[in-house]
Image 1 (tube, one colour):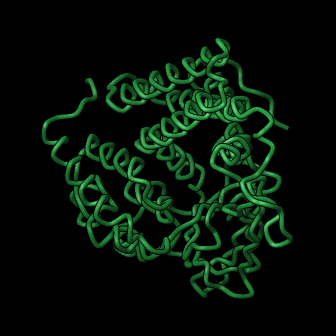
Image 2: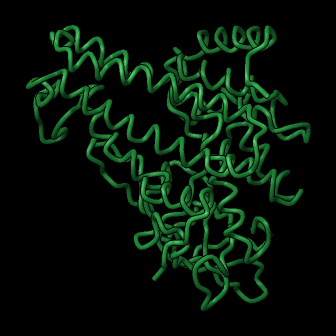
Length: 386
C-alpha cells in the first residue's frame, strides 16, 4: 500500500499542533513534562485496544504526532526509551502481568527507562556481553553483576532493561535473558555520567554489583533474551525516523542561513553541497514513508532499518561538516568567554558538528549495518567470528 495522510489525519494534526502551542512554553523540567504528556493522552499512541495506552490511533497519526512534536520546539523527551522501545517489546513478548505492571506507568509518564545493552567489550558486537544474572536460590530474584556503557539517560531512569547472561558458560547469542531491573538500588547500582565532546553528559556508565531483578521480570522467558533484544532493535527505527528528519530539516535551514550571512553561499561548490543535502533529505523522507507503508516481502523489511541508518548517519555528519565550512574561521570561536566552571560553550551549529561525529557509531555502527545487509539480505557468507 501507499502511505499517505487523510483529512482525518489533518484534523488530528491540527489538534496536536494546538495542544503543543498551548503547553510547550510552560513545559517545566523533563519529568514533569512527561507527566503532562501522559495526562493529556499523548504517550502510548497506537498501543492498540489492550487498555494500556492512551489513544489507539493508527500509524499515520503516530507519524503526525511525531512530526508536530519535532516542529514545536518542545523539550527533549525523557520517556521515549520506555515508550518507543520497551513498550512495543512488552506488547510483543511480555506476559499479561508485565504489561499491566509497566505499560500504564509508561503511558502516564510516571516511570522512565534506560537501555542496558552495550558494554565496554560488547558494543557493536552485542553478542559478546559479559554481564551476568544469577538466580539467588529461592529468593525469587536474580543478582545482576557487570557493567553497561553508553546508557542514555541512566541518571534519570527509574528502571533499566538489561541484556544479561543467565546461563553460566554460555557464549554468543545463547544463554541470554532480557531483565527489567529497578535503578533505585544504592550500593548495588552506580551511575557515572560520561562527558562528551559537546560538554554534555546524556550517556552514562552503569555498574551492577549484585543488583536485584525479580524472576517474574524476565521478558520472553529465561534464555530467550537475544530474540527479544533483536525485536526491540527493530522498533528503534520506525516512526521516530520521520520526526528525526523534521529536526534535520530545521538544522539544514540554520546552515543555509549561516551560509547566506557569511557569504559562503556565493561559492558554487557550497551551493551544490547545500542542494545535495536538501535533495537527499527529501529522498530519505519519501523512503521512510514508503517503508512504513510497504507490504513488501520480509527481505526488504529486514534490510530497511539498516539502510535508513546508513543514509541518515553519514548525511548528518556531512551537514555538521558543512556547518563549520560555511562559518569559516568563526566556527572555531565559542559564543561565550572561557571560564573554569564552563570551559567552553557551543552554539547550535558547533554542537551539531561535534555531536554528529558519533552518528555513524551509536545505534549500530556503519560497519555493523553493512554486515547485516550483506548477510541477512543479500545472503553473502557470514563474517568469521573470533
